[in-house]
Image 1 (tube, one colour):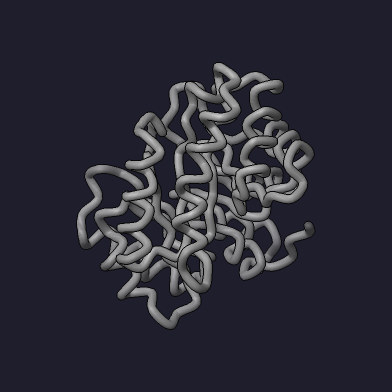
Image 2 (spheres, rainbow, N blue to C red; image 1 turned 135 degrees about the vertical axis):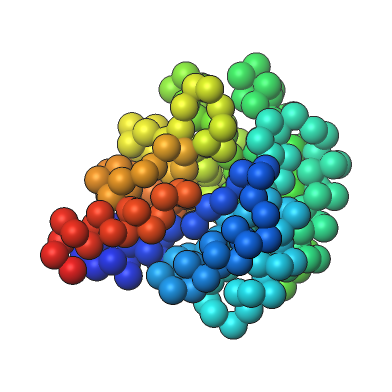
Length: 230
């Protein structure tokens, strides 16, 4: 995918604010920036979904939130309940943290149940809610990444996402994005975690990402515009 304009780049970015210290004024500013720059979505904590959904209604910007975040270590039942609540509150997209222990230990049945529990909730509504599954790629070996992507694709995920951005192992890398895209060709890839420059964003897209998550979205657009003379 070749990005030629600021608008094309903005349309691939989830403008993110997942800090536990975010307050209402921060969310309002985030949504206003998303509307102004025409980002794909805002990505916010479940606490703020009703407000974001209200502010973004009719703008074309989607409301994205997280489930089982950031550890992914709660039961499939609790993830499903959380997904049901955020969808009822107006979420258009759900980024769920997968069971990392299941990935590390190669527990296919456990991981499949984990993802399917949220996927079923996302599919019960019309139009279906987009499901992105976070695998925490920086904490995994290549073999584990391939395993997680294969199971995620089998479970019906719409996207596989690199990172929460909160793991000590780090965030997205172009190499892992490329591997994920190869391992799960029926899924789209979202790169997130540590993407702060236009150069990094474009590298992720070139590697196969069709969505990016970043809290530095405006900075990325400004860098791209400056480099492109737009």
